[in-house]
Length: 399
Image (cartoon, rainbow, N blue to C red; front, side, top):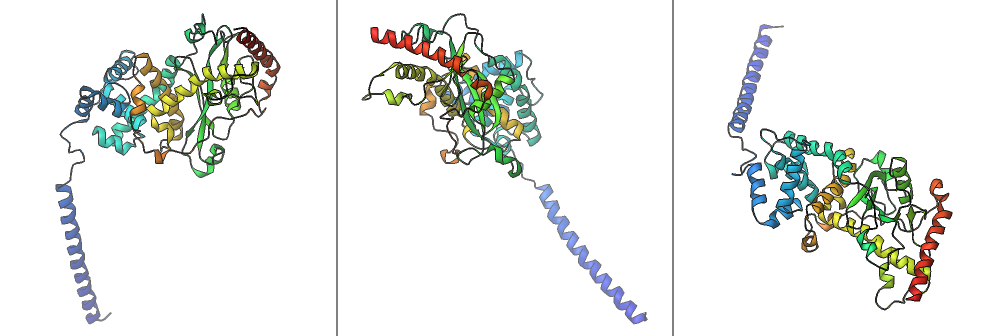
């Protein structure tokens, strides 16, 4: 290489070095400005704890909107979790704040970013405390969703001649309900329901006080109500000897699960003003069956009105999505035990836009004879139902 070429190459390298120095200097100055003038994320004068206190000590509607319950109910639940050592107070986050995060999530379908903004904590802190409540939901379900210990018929049956003695062994009602689920494409097919949307088929049982006594979550939206019931029975759901639940036409009629007569007027609106009175024992039975079974539909209506997260898709992990209906049922029961009001829900706008609700099917209209273990019990179930219905009709005609 000639000396002239070597000199030229050296000059170009020096020019390149000068250019890179200018570029790096500019980048350094830009980054230095950014680092030295960081805009803090949480600029509110109120910390998460102070914001929670403002809600709990302010107007009662603030707490109802934020957490879907009254302040005294919220505080009682937090104290219960503390006294039972189900949750612990942490240095920067007390149990009340942990509960507030979780209830705000259920009430608003709040994302972690929403919770971060509302409660002024880091994403890691929010995630850790939401997870801590998800972990105790199985324990709370065991404690607060229990089949009733029935020594005598419920007062709504015992004191009403339309129901007593015919339904004296009835301990509640059962229904299936679809809850939206968000799942990736390769696993989605079984969760696609007859409306074409994605859901889990959830089975619930409730008593005549509108408390949930059992819940089974996680079944695919394509599963029939009867299959979900069979799965629950295989997993330990037991009906006390001699007792029964009321179910709709999507279930087999068995001694433990009494369904209405098929092909006969059933829904309450079919017996409303301007319609004929019951014409035979089947119609009379169906009418009174519908009145009692309506309790489970009312309970589900209150549950979904209180926690509208049950009407929309979420982006929680599947394990938590399956847990959300159970968590909602648990807190529903706890609120009712603490005499929380629910009448205000009828006049309270939803926290989530109805346009975001997922279009979901109702429960199954007819039983598809798809559960052999239930089919084998239908003859006995039909005999029990006929005996009840005919005695009911005999008394009705006499009176």
